[in-house]
Image 1: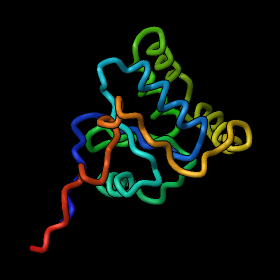
Image 2: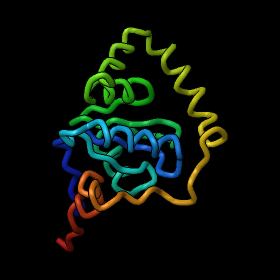
Image 3: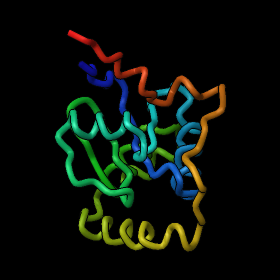
Length: 148
């Protein structure tokens, strides 16, 4: 049996081949000095398992997903929750949550639909540098299969 992925820290799931998404993850890494967040590309088996564990079905690669404990957030809500936890002044972006979510998500969806055309894409998911590798959720974090 494959065990659940530990969710002791919030985990950001992102489109691993999207240049904008990869840049966003690098930004979070650079402005999260306490290492609060962990990461996994949406294309990974770890992300698939994690989304299944929290009951999020029917996802696509057009949304950023924040898994925090047993809860998950998508699109602008996920992005702004992450921003609110970053170092100052970036944490001030969290105040944008006062804007109604349908408006925020409409802007998010517009950017998401053109992100490859504007920012490009990679042929494969990013490979984390050794300095931040421990912050990326890997399949081995899920445990090993058992023959029991």
